[in-house]
Length: 410
Image (cartoon, rainbow, N blue to C red; front, side, top):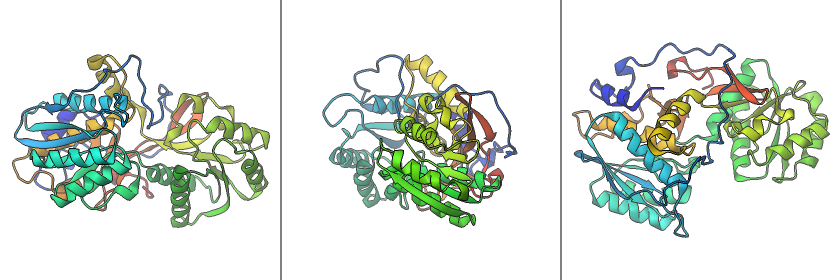
């Protein structure tokens, strides 16, 4: 993993929008299949994990005292007034990133959005009034929309953490783990390994709708046929699995974008209907990096895309040493956003957070690997393709270390 100190060092070399390439950090990536030692299981990217109780609330105020101000708008408290473990974890990750950066260019103004759209709007207004040049957060889509309205009116960029790509637009960039990225990567890998006729077993949910739309679009771009699509109500996949079983002679890969809580019932339905992963390749998403999913017999041999584990494991170790608890899986988003802000704030030119810099085509290297922002707001990430095997994962296709080395469909 590249530490935040790298971001600060590289900022000195910025002569163009290419942040990391200026320091030559990217090595030659590889997409060759390889088997790695199975990483420790992780929770799903949307689930907090903790070994000890978190503090009742994260402190609100400022981190650092540098001349460049950025705001960190987080759900430090829930709408009912209780402390938010995810918000605390994101705030702590920001503090860790600031310390790792080793510079004193930033003041991070920590604002609580109270997990509500109105709270996010008020926090963004306060941030702009306090002189913030960049807003980092919020997490939830309705809150991000309200904060973005304030930021756009003040001509300030936003790096948000929502997974809803409808919140993204020019000047509002998403650093989150996007469904679309998971789907594109695993479909591209499947196509490159001879899969031509596809099926889908998809929950009737917002997540399922987005995943299915991207699956169909990715297949069309690659000239693949989607032969069968069956939908099921979450928790009741049996009938849909029976219908997809009838289509098995026509398909050689089956996409199942179920959440970790849904997958035990789905796996049971696959087994009951004779859907064997040894005969049809099962595909999933990054939400499957979850112990209860990895242990399901029906999913052994399945493929899915996700960030590689090493970067998060290193971050989590440092976080644990400092705070005595495990971070939320999405805490790396705050860490990377603050690391990037520290790097850009360190350069002498102003303004520090221009669209040209934030949307560098070379991208940036963070705790979960390489990423870059598109001009219209969503991100692209360097993801690995993993295979479930023996209740753990092996790496079939390593995450690219640069966008130049990314697979063709990336």
